Amino acid sequence: MELSVVVSTLNDRERLVSCLDALAERTPAETERIVVNGPSSDGTTGVVRDRNDIDVLVEISERTPNVSRNAGLELATGDVVAFLDGEYAIDHSWYPAIDESMADGTDVVTGPVTGRPIDDAEPSSHAVDGRTVTHFHGDNVAFDRSVLEALDGFDEYLTQAGERDCAHRVASLDFEVSWNAAMAARCEVGTAGGGSIDSRRSSSELRSDGGRTDPDWGTAYRSLSYRLAKNYGLRPNVLARTAGSALREGAAGVCRLAAGEATPTGWLSDGTDVVRNVTRGLWDGARARYRDRSRRRNPHGLSQRHDRAVQVYDWR
Image 1 (cartoon, rainbow, N blue to C red):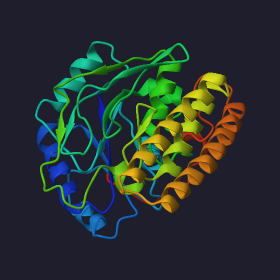
Image 2: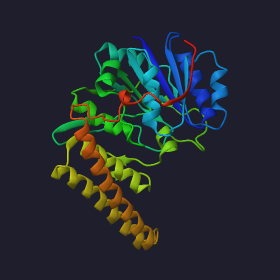
Image 3: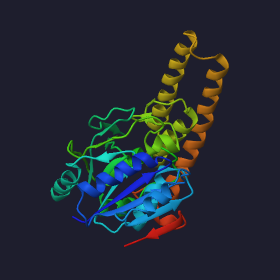
Image 4: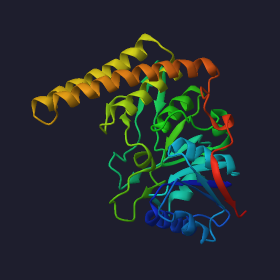
């Protein structure tokens, strides 16, 4: 197995050092290590350039995780490409777990992450329009390169929850996602001020294409409606799924309002934001579906642009 590891980081120099130290210690010397930085303002560039165990440093100007992932993927040469958030240090079993899974013919493999404010248990599968979709941790996942080529990378329209859209497209192309508990990554440095690359770049994500873990309603529901409309079309079940999720959140907001935990003005503002962004997401998702009518459903993918990098330091 020829492994490339794409590490995304944003203003998290201390934990990035821990991540890179673990990669150097716990993966073979021939592993290709690519750091995608930015736009950081904490001296990350100098720290990475002073190391001799990094093959490529890519500086980008956009704060979205999918742009970061695609920027690293564009320069990766391995037949297996792993994506890791710079917040996490891999366990000793991480590389053997990927090697074992890929040797068994796995398309996509993911593992647990600890030290983050979400459930690190085995990702769940959901039936959407007759398709079984298995979500994975975007901060700790490895792909066979042929899968990424078939997907054309990640959809850069999405400012967050891009791995969820990718999971729908993986299922559409009949690839399978497997779970390996030994492919573990953990936060080894203090948790203050950090969070995953998704939360640092754009802080909202829906649970299982439904509930919400962060109060940024507009961004979350725009992402949800876009990826459902793009992957499944404007079908009644898509509209019902989106509306049902919004209504559940609205009802929860009423409960918070009754408990004095929210204000009427805030509740109304949030509701207006949801309606506006759901409408925009459905419209943009339908347009994206029309633009790319292939099964990969990715009109904003890797091949669509080559100007992500502001600066590339290539020491290979």
